[in-house]
Length: 458
Image (cartoon, rainbow, N blue to C red; front, top):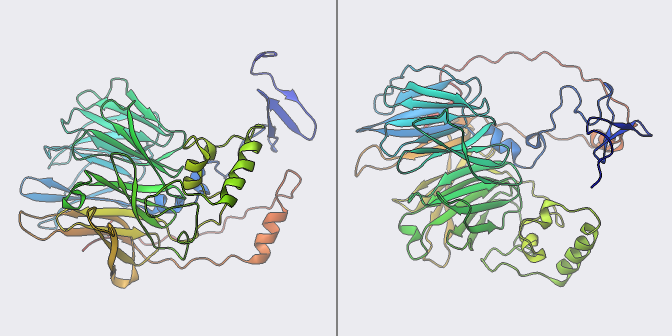
């Protein structure tokens, strides 16, 4: 490549466009080509399918401390801490300026680490909830994990990178572990601490060895929208197949995978007739089955991509057959409710699933040795028609029944789009389209909830 002039120089072109490094960018009113309009964000979270489920998800966690448990809930930037046995609130500092979205607890139940979009990484001492140390990271934090030796905190950020920091000295530079092309949505370590699972918006779950994360053990391909949450099931239900993975996605499905090779074992769909008759996606674990029409479509798409239109859809699996299993480009989009959270109960081989704006919990039975490995067994409606936004499961004491904690929000009826507005929006796309003035109407301030956003214990 030949560079003509310094990269800071920009050549003015026709039609009000500027070119920088060979790319055309539309010029905005302020003269800076390619910048977002005032008040609008270019973040994929604003428009991607399932992004609303990630924004609605709330952190709720029961942390074992000695013979009792401490409830940690983050409905906003304020952390609410309470004793699960007595219900008494625990006073603590509030270092975060935005809602906490990630927490990790040490196996020794003495350390908790929190993080979120404010880029702050805070280490707490349990059970007093006193801050031991805090640092600011470079990117927004999506998920956190602690290794089994409680020596390193694993940080997944919104840019798609995973880093490791020694817990004893967070000020030291982070060590890069792995990276995704797209933004990460969730991350967790296996119970053995030897596998690191990462989920991203490009519809896949990656299983990497830990701490040697350059070795990828398997990739789970099958979701047709972004993966919103991932959990490892290591109970009796996984006997015979090793550890299995449960993942939920914006395609309104929960899928069961075998961790060792990424094989799809079972799919449970909560949508309205999406994939049963679709030859591009196999729900019985037999991946790679394509119809002749699908092969022809993929062949044409590959030819067009050879002329400069390469996309992630054709880089995900390296082959057209693998790509067809993870891309919905050639079929209708799913408009069902995305999966918000999954909570596992290994003692009863049960998983609780929360869907976006759905006023019930869905219970699934997990049994990797059965013919139907993932079966829906019932629904549990929430009181007052509220919708779950976060789940946490714990056992108060040895031999006692497990308790499911549910963070919830009032049900919000879906907004009906005016067809005329939709047609107008379609017509007014382009550089010459008239710009509408946005008038901000005053909104009445809602009364503050003393409970911190509606955490409910079930």
